[in-house]
Length: 285
Ligand SMILES: [Zn+2]
Image (cartoon, rainbow, N blue to C red; front, side):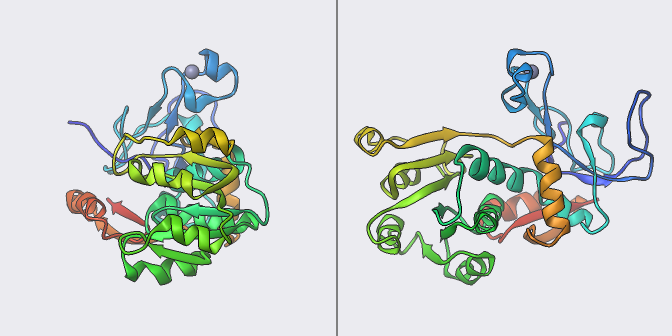
């Protein structure tokens, strides 16, 4: 059977031969992307678009287990200041949002950002990273009980997308201007309408498709407003190391909804599918 689980922290049980700075018993966090190191894109230093790219828990057996086998090069020491739980909430959500906002969208202080689904892992991470940069954030949520949560992370304005029109709210919040950046991970009508919420020369970064893998665009908005539509996945292992520093310093806070014991892994996944979570859901062996 296949073992899911992309985001993993733990201690080193044993090491293969070969050079490694790791020692048995050491606390580590696993960088969840695997690349070949020899294809054209790896040679360009763009390992996340490796021709043979794979994810822990998707292309290899992952972390819903007591033991997991990963390359030593994918392990980073987990600082004592970061719990295993907080660390496990980091790799996908924070690394992807970090790379999307800072590297792809080149977010700058004072710019405005629309973050979808503040209750999700990427949403809760993107709000904090945007605020860390000195940007201002408008966020969407799917229920009113997540509004205060989004504000506590740093969102200045929060829109319930089920009862309010996020394009209208964004226009109003920015005095009709529109936002500089949208972090889009929903797809479908949300993708299309997100381009209406962008200002001229704005950037939409696509980092997922949680509702649907499809979306259409009114191309007149794209070319007449000179929009940038970018895609990205994950980030670099060095960026993960930088993130660990910010988390250890208390500048970024992984948001954990709740933890399930490993035997209840199915219930944990259903909890997320039902969208009952505010932040990450953990499975603890
Ligand atoms: Zn490669």
